[in-house]
Image (cartoon, rainbow, N blue to C red; front, side):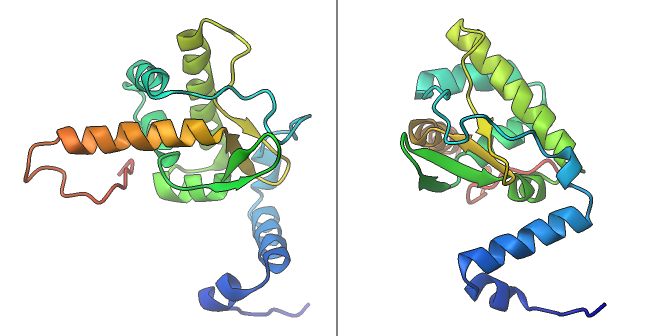
Length: 174
């Protein structure tokens, strides 16, 4: 067996196919692939419902006591990658895991399920989905949902008194 070492700059500058292959190899070697959700039948999120700012605030109110879910929720304030028809925003589960400092992908999935359940209650529709998954380790949301979560995050920051929360927009479960 031969080992090869790449710098983060080399990986970042590599073509998308190479980065994806490296990501899959790392996930598989860490044993995280078994914890990943099953592939969605329609991975482009046709079943996802757009969440407006009022819905996002209502979901946040329902998960406020669940700090990990609260932190995962605000990961969607970050820009994602938009693709497909209808368009969806993709967020890598491994990035959400890293940013929220949770221990494993299973915890991220539990938080996302709590968010989906809260969203279904807010919409009074048990089939309403805030987010979905693909078989590549991504969480998918509607672009309108990302915009609503980002707007909610900005309004929370704007409401902070000066001198408090000198944060630049990151939320972590430290």
